[in-house]
Amino acid sequence: MFIHRHSFTVRHSPVVPARAHGRRLAAFVLAPILALAAAGCSAGGSNSPAKADVGADDTTPVTITFWHGLSSAHEVAAVNAVLAKFHQKYPYITVQAVSGQTDDKVNQAIRGGTAPDVASSFNAANVGGWCASGAFQDLSADIAADHVDMSQIPQAVQSYTAFDGKRCTMPWLADTFGLYYNKKLFAAAGITAPPKTMTELAQDAKKLTVFNPDGSIKTAGFMPYLGTYQMVTEHLVTSWGGKWLKPDGTSNVASDPAFAAALTWQKNLVDWFGAGKLAKFKAGMGDEMSAQNAFETGNVAMMVDGEWRTAFIKNDKSDVDYGTAPMPVADDKPELYGSGYVGGNVIGIPKGSKHPAAAWKLVKFLTTDTDAVASFADAIGNVPTTIAALDSPALTLAQDPDFATFLEVFKNPATSTTPASPDGGAYLTDFGPFAEKWQNGQVPDLKAGLAGVDKQNDAALKLSQ
Image (cartoon, rainbow, N blue to C red; front, side, top):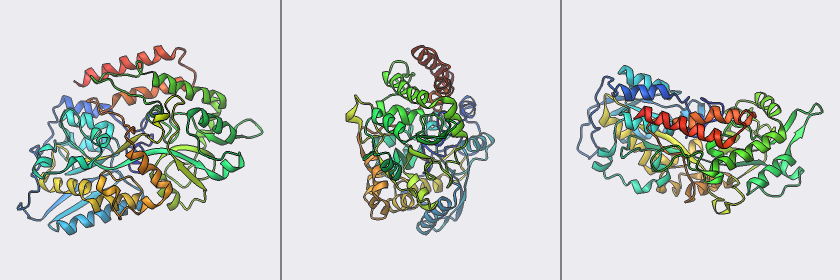
């Protein structure tokens, strides 16, 4: 789970994720992106278009730097393995990979003129800001010169890697979200199949919940408290088909009834548990990316999560007996069942890259070479972002029915993502404090509150232009 991971581990706001590889996303920081835009990305270093790999180009030995956010041992090993394949194809290019890097560090390096040659991010929400400001170089000329077939990348994935006609990043695996459920706890509660509607999800959550004698939560059937692992608004509102932005790029949360419906459902379940009890239970949950994850230990019976969790459960040697399914959908939106939310890791060439030609070779290899994409996805348990890689024999995880669920969600034409915006996805960050107040009973008028979020979002949009 890059985006986990690859979108969207909550690391910057109590209720919204930071990615896409939607998972361990780096903390979202709007100010650095706006600063880059205001400064015109005046950091030192070349900003000329990368030289396309058209065959007879320079093979002078060169060393390039590559910053990425992956940090767990098995994921870092997987990165090194795919980079070894790259070096085998381009023996004159040596890649110095630096793990555990955040978007904030990348932004600082760009401003300071010390940007890496290539950088990846869990947070696709930042793509709009990077493209609009020039912080990441437009790859369109390279793509055209090398005749890269962009149709091999699904449209939903293409949409979060470009903005306003500029493709300043490419997708580097995707995170697709669905429902994980504990089969043992389901059987004990007499539940025979995973829920398909949000009403069924709420009913099952109540059946599966066990309270301690003092009234505190022992086992949560489902954690509706926003900010708990991958339980974030963008993963929730998808079940109602919500659209964050209008066609003109302005905020849509008050106009789209999906947001009020999703939050009303969520608050009703929070109230059934008790917000205070949920907050206390959340505080005692193990770290999301560790073997103490509450689902892996059996303390949470159902949760929304990305495909990467299948690999984590295996690597953590958890004995949880689990299954996966698409996320339940609104009762009046049965046509959405089977779809879900997709986000992903993105990769590009920052302004100031000292070796843009070699950098483009690496970006193209990691994102379009079928074996590289499929084998890397297989190694870290992510969804490939090219059609060819989805059908590659190197993707052995496709034979795992629990992982295959996410491949089917990824392919579903109704699967959606959060759109890019020039303010770096400020509409997501702005929604966080509001959702926190909402679930704790501090928003007396939901409609008026959502209208206020729209005003805040639109103000941030104007500031970025």
